[in-house]
Length: 255
Ligand code: NAD
Ligand code: ZN
Image (cartoon, rainbow, N blue to C red; front, side, top):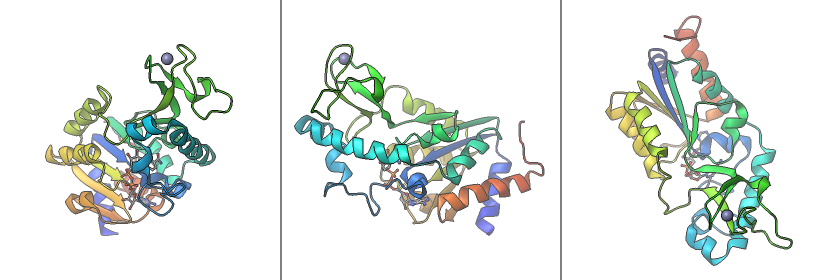
């Protein structure tokens, strides 16, 4: 438990905190990670479906996969790690949660200081006029999985950053700006194989932040971390919050 204590101390003395989450934080909510067990769908790997080329080749297939994933996400509930992050957001002068997840569990748990850097599974974007809409507002075409744009009838795609695509303007700037000011950066459930988010965490550390990593498996981030909390997010993030509160006495840090 020494590592938990060190992590709690780093958080308790921080004014600015950046949290970065990946698919692992939602694993205990029943949403499979891409690279873990259950990451395959009908024999396809995510990297074969979440690309502009796959969508160009077979938009029906890609939408069928997204509808399956969206159904899993809508039935899933936030777990104690999502809830503990909502608690953490009010404890620091500045806080930002940058998630790679598209499942919507952070906003559903109540996180507000949040950027979903890879988009959200409940939104769609028109490939013709670029309108971004809640998927429920897109027009269904009878017999087709592919929704169409209610404004221009163009084909709609999931509003999600796919493999090989560049980030939307401004999204990473916000995360890097938070990284440069952070005193502590808390990385949870990310394999570090998705590079810009790992780079944000390492950039924060370079600028002086204590890097804390939570993951049951060692990764490149845990190897570089100041504190590696090895285990499940659902256990360790609430434990970290409580340890941080114990260090702070009554807990709330507003200045
Ligand atoms: P990944 O699938 O590459 O890795 C998940 C990481 O989570 C692994 O390192 C694993 O050891 C760890 N993990 C597993 N169970 C955990 C637990 N209980 N607690 C903490 N950590 C746990 O995921 P990634 O690095 O986030 O990257 C994959 C990409 O796929 C991301 O860009 C993300 O947008 C997308 N994705 C999103 C979701 C989602 O929205 N829930 C699900 C799958 C993939
Ligand atoms: Zn359109």
